[in-house]
Image (cartoon, rainbow, N blue to C red; front, top):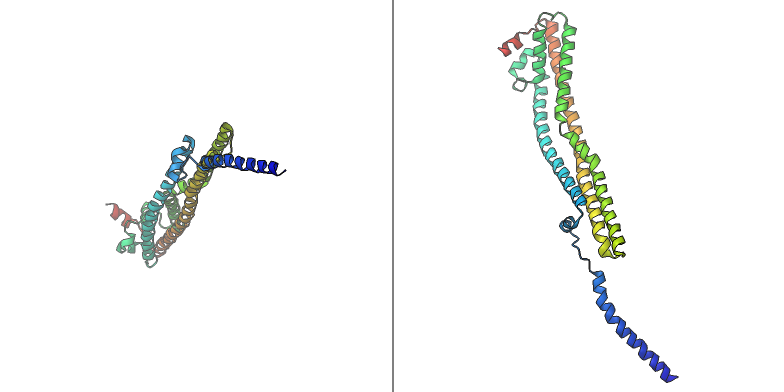
Length: 262
């Protein structure tokens, strides 16, 4: 009995001695992932479709920031100029006094009002008709101004709306590649699954990086443009009051516009 027990013990020890080295040698091979899971490494090893998605999202993000810088400078300069024109117009008593205000020299609203007074020089007795035509000119000018100010801003809206879905497409493609790798290699080893999942997550992340700032920028510029248009509308109302005063006093004429053209 004792002899049989000793034989069994020796057999177990020998078995562990045989298995342990083999396990120790096999373990590093299982744990090793033959890919570089950095941003540059994931991009270099990604499928060409995923690369195309990533490059497109990078260009979209670059376009968003370019528009942000350019539009910020444009709106800042336009708003400062409009503020000066508004502050100058609200203190005047007559449209002719605009000649002495530097901020109103060459102002589009003053030019529109003066042009209409010149064209209506033989019908100034119809004050309501003159003011109605001036208001029409102001509305067309403000509409053109809105189109000019929103140029480029709509691109931000497009990027904000589409970038997440483009990133999602890259995500789906990367996950699909992961499942294809599993099917081809008949294994769920992390070395097989990780690259495709990493590519998918990178595409998703870049989609959000492009979309979130674009949406914030679009909302910011929408508020800024609305505020600028309100300021221009206030200036137009102030100039219309100047025209109304001149018509009521009977001093409105087209001489100022005619002299300016000459």
